[in-house]
Image (tube, rainbow over all chains, first blue to last red; front, side, top):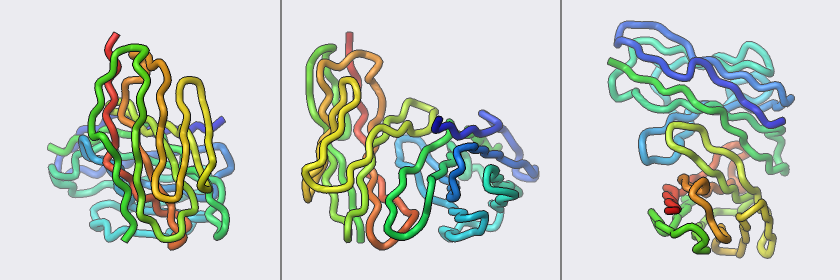
Length: 116
Length: 111
């Protein structure tokens, strides 16, 4: 089973709202990722958690705040977003981020976010 | 800087008309090349991982191959349900986590 789940599927929010995206995997993977994807573009990496610790932040604005409560869950907290933040937000996970091992990232279905 | 280039940007085929998609890469110390399929509004679906030149992998109508400079995704006798965007991504020796993606090939298979 290589399933990554994401909720909600769709989210519409105003620029003053606070909302959260949720991602879950039960494959025992120890690396989890957030990506942002605009229409007709490839996914862009935002954050990486490895063994529940933030390993990479690709200079993402502070209005996006990631959280990894445990090895199966990944959240993305959203606050004071801009209309240009509207996109498909993808979560992914991979088995082992250890050096020397090339592991495959498995993506969830995504959350379609619209900021009004 | 790592670069991944996919061609063509878009490809239209008739059902049953076999063809190939190309992914050329310039990556420092390739550790893996990945093919994904993505349907509109959905997350990428994993297809193949290739690790070394000469490697080939097959799944139903799809076959992926790898050389030292490029990878091909061969589609044999495609069906309309094969219509999707196909993404190629590479992982270099410089990172345990980062993938460099190509811009994708939009494949349309007409019945």
